[in-house]
Length: 175
Length: 175
DNA sequence: CACAATTCAATTGTGCGCAATTGAAAATCG
DNA sequence: CGATTTTCAATTGCGCACAATTGAATTGTG
Image 1 (tube, rainbow over the protein chains, first blue to last red):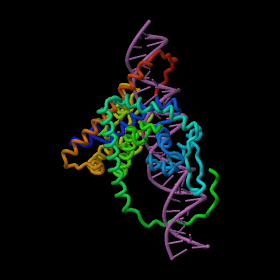
Image 2: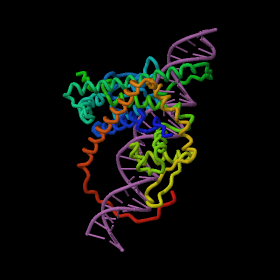
Image 3: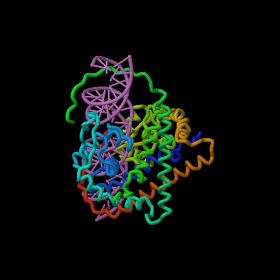
Image 4: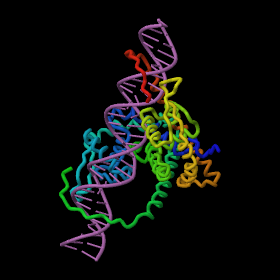
């Protein structure tokens, strides 16, 4: 009758969901001086590693689609930290470049990981604690991969015979 | 120069964020037959455990505020699975009751946890795997607690001397 | 080469999350 | 008791997430 498996406390998904939101809330005060939100911070992290990438590849890295990224990047552009530029070789693509302000922001962000690690209860000097942190990170990554792999396995068999209507060609506007 | 600490792959927050979203995506096809979203599912889980609770207590359980819950609960009410009723003893409170349709939905939900555990790569028969699952859940819960405890410690010192203007009293509408 | 299919970013629409405010009801305090 | 403060749900506004569609550019194929 009581169905233990349906208890909220038993759900790994809820623990994940809840911990993730708590983590994002913890970042907020640290990101406020930079004037960006948490998802925007993730985009900046990706761009600080590699610049001039397309919306597509950025989306693959962060598991976000253009529906999320396009407006987010437009806001970052309005803030003056990135530049969105239609590719010359392939007009479908839009390359995202950091501005100098965007590159400078990286210096202000340097202290964030350590500050957050402390907040999350990890002693930055403690080698063993850092090892556990890395372990948790890997566990989560592995979990995500397993879930996503299964999704593909389920989605793929349905891949099939769609027939799209042809479309006329008009020159794409500058943006 | 390369600042390893700012690498996206190094971020526990991103692993959490990404895994959590993957998990929610995995739930979606299982929830579609019930006609509810993932956050609505969490609310139903809470209500199946305890009925007739206030929006406030539901919010504490799920770490969500009225800004999120009120419209969500209105949608669940429109679906006919819950009833929202202004408390008689305390007119500020709104009690959330399951309808019979809401209680029946629990039967359809019974298979979900097992189905999801498999998808997440946990063999339901394997005691050791289940132990690891529980361990991960506890690690996440502990992490969340640590983060939230620190938030309170930071927020509290700022608690101080606000002076609100008085307000007139009008009878609250039925809903 | 024509034309069908695919790829890519943008757009549309819905549902969260959450900060901040509002309005009413209850609790507290002088 | 009357005024102040606190509590509670609702509302407002903004920024994600994400499914679905659109429009244009490219690729693939006969």
